Image 1 (tube, rainbow, N blue to C red):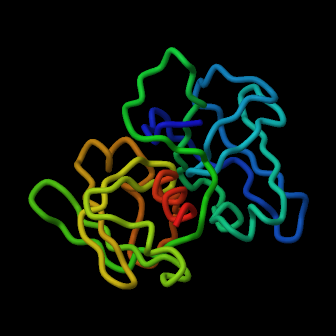
Image 2 (cartoon, rainbow, N blue to C red):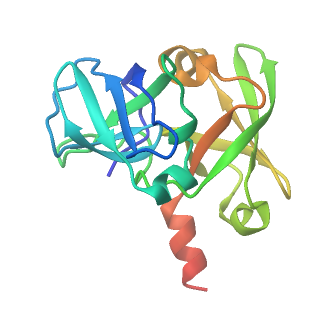
Length: 192
């Protein structure tokens, strides 16, 4: 389990090769982790296959199809979060690292000192029921608050701190993000 509070970013050392084994490597930004530990990579719960100066992960085909992991390029910045310990504060919200779908950034607007990102998820009819104004959402592993939404889109605002300390500072229109909808919303929908 995670919180969506990103404390480290890093660069991709070796992206997933097309049709390969799903191996993916990033430079270790001094995380105190070892083989077998879980971290999120852009919101994807990932098991460390090999630790050290670099961190090696391996993904199954479903993960590569459902997330942006196979589209991340060499040198691209990614968000990392270590798994939550029982003694940690829950600063963001409950994040599982189980990505539901990918969204496209369709607009980025400046508003004062923040930026508004408009996101369109794949299959909006399937997923927009999990969106609520001022509700929680996770984009590329970052815990955010939904500001507004329509039938096929939702918006989030990012403050300068978030833009500077996550990979969102490098995002542009047309870019893709991993989306994890709030687990409470998913369970409530399931109980209907």
